[in-house]
Length: 317
Image 1 (tube, rainbow, N blue to C red):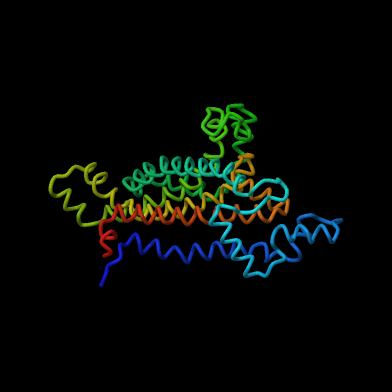
Image 2: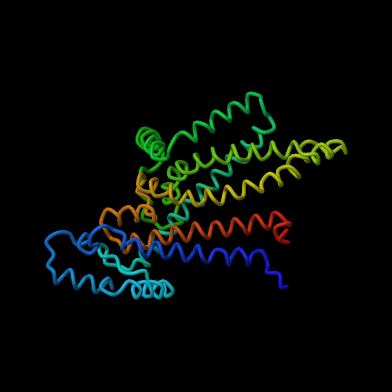
């Protein structure tokens, strides 16, 4: 019997999920109550204009034919045309997606930068005041939503203190100093709540590893505390944290929709809300598809990282 590699099996398992995402996004425009074309153009449009627009979108064809056309266009990178912005959906997403990816990655890095040392310190100081302090701070972080933290940061840091710009991303390009300054507040807004989640996860995972027999054996053999903690316990404790990081990266995309709107950050999230308010269903379909595919890709990368860190998974044990 031929043994299929674990990574290839996982890739095959994602194909039904990919099909489901594309199918649900395709049906999005058909699940809208009433006539989506009439809702897009509003009142006052003539029957001839509605019929012509319906034909240009291909909505007058049978549903199976529309579905086949959608897949064909998707395979060629064609996600349709935005009615309101008069531009291809693919081009609009390519313009805005790098900003969302930059915001999500920077928020994740900030969360890890805070959560790893805080979680380790909390585990090593279990029951003492640093543990209680970090537990209280993380609880506040979990309880404070992004839509509340964002305006607070704008009022205090931008308006009162004048340290950072209020909104937007500047006009100097994605990798400019001006964009980095605009990026700080949205990154802090998204990253702090994720840091609270990861801090508690790192603490729990570290405590579990510190109770294991191999740690006591390492101490008995004369290994220093730092070597036992950072060379052995931390590596094993990061395995479940990797899974949480991958799942939370997907949630960052959902959180970015609100955060991008608060800070007028020109990402896919803000583009999605604009498309919804303008009833631009082709653009809503494209943005939803990109977010779903990014979530799927993040899960695949998480599986790959988990397998790389755990040799038993690479062997399929």
